[in-house]
Image 1 (cartoon, rainbow, N blue to C red):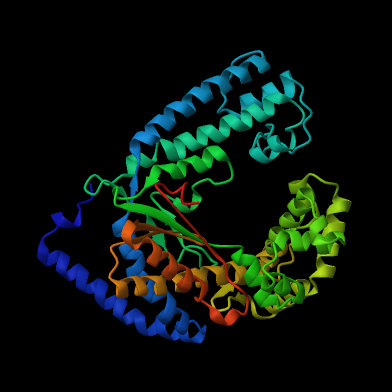
Image 2: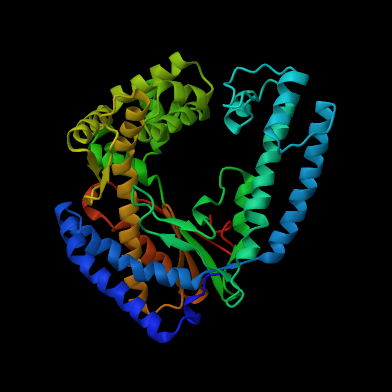
Length: 449
């Protein structure tokens, strides 16, 4: 039976608010000292604090939502789900609860006798999670139907049905909350709704972006995206000559990597080779092993090991960066981004191999992902200042990892495009790697890609 603040007498709430302010002020002395001791005062004063009013404006601005589109999409998804349910039950020879892992395990691995090589759960049941089922995709057609069913069910419940309920009744728009201090790498996160997680890997998932639209017919949505920013940052941090050269020559980095790893000319690289090189380029950032690469590419572990070994031969600077970074983390207990943002790694010297390996992967990845996060934050500050100077009607409304989204007043489009590309490219001019920004425009967020 809690009261809201508006129901508490003014004298009482005044005392409470004064205590809040006083304690915060007392804490400032302590936290100021801690921030300076950790070398984070510049980061705080020049990045995090100036970003607060910008995020506040973005949250208040919100984004317009096409509710009729989502209602129609929900109907389309439900029709597809009815067909999928029917197909699954027909193949299984009976109906069962598709949301029950226990029933699904019994149907798939007992009744249908699909070979099961995974571990059982703590309660002794068959695991039917996505990883287990994906590994069995070629064993029976029912598996792919179940995976499709799960994908569409999640899309419908998490986004298509949920987003309209989050529209503010006063503004008619969605207002996410941006968090500056949740992600250990310094990345922004968001909630209610979590717009960082809008699916992009599948066509049906990407279609949800169609629901995000400009405020009215005089506006368009514009998306500005850093291209391969984490790979550019690892090139800058590691100073690997081969990778720096590829970016300075404006080569397709995945084709360039494939040519180096497979010992051929860039013209001879085919689609499959590029796919493998792309998996290694991004996998290395996250400390991927030969086993992990073999699983993601569905190739023998020996081939995956050979690809990784060749990768490090061709990019020795990246291998040196990884070794040096782990050694630094073991000695100091933390790693740093280009702007000296620290991530502490308490398990970096753990005796438990699994726990230590996880900390080592974080040590490798955090300076890269964290530097990309710092970079886009600086870009947001620069873009906001430049937009204010021009007195634009256009608004910056969303930040999703390496991407900024704008509600653009049509007459300002060309000028804003130039401004955004310029400020994003020059956010961290000292890193010494060409930065590429891709811009798209459309009547919805999907079209802007």
